[in-house]
Amino acid sequence: MKRIEEIQAYLGEIRKDERFISDLVLETIPYKNKSKSTWVEIEYPEFTSLCPRTGLPDFGTIFIKYLPEKTIVELKSLKFYFLQFRNTGIYYEELPQLILNHLTKNLHPYEMTVEARFTSRGGMQSRVVSTYKR
Image 1 (tube, rainbow, N blue to C red):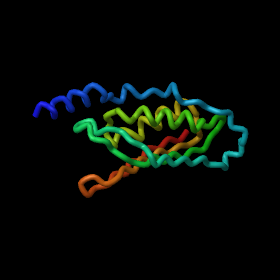
Image 2: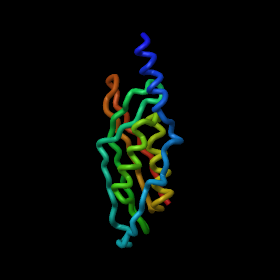
Image 3: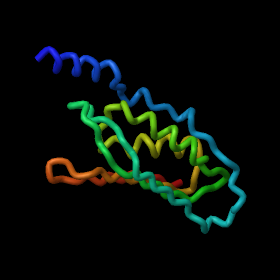
Image 4: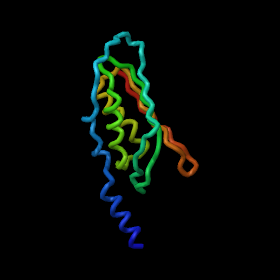
């Protein structure tokens, strides 16, 4: 019993909430194609976060699709952005909107969609989509 309490205390120490996630790590690159006909699509199949109730890991894939105006996201910085979620407790339903808010704030795209698909848990799969259109 003492070991379980130690583990719970440790998890409580390392677990962050969504205020820990910062968009300051996101870098942008000038976008030279001004045709408004090229969509950028990014798939990140190694996404992890924590269940805010249990502290257990959640695994999923993040899909980002956007129509850039003047800037695009630098991919290495996006990976570092996603790494912040590893010890962060956040509900599935809130995750895509938070990512969308951070990306649109930095990129100012014409349109963007962020989709999160999480692996099965208890026989259920979750898919949550947030969209932005200027």
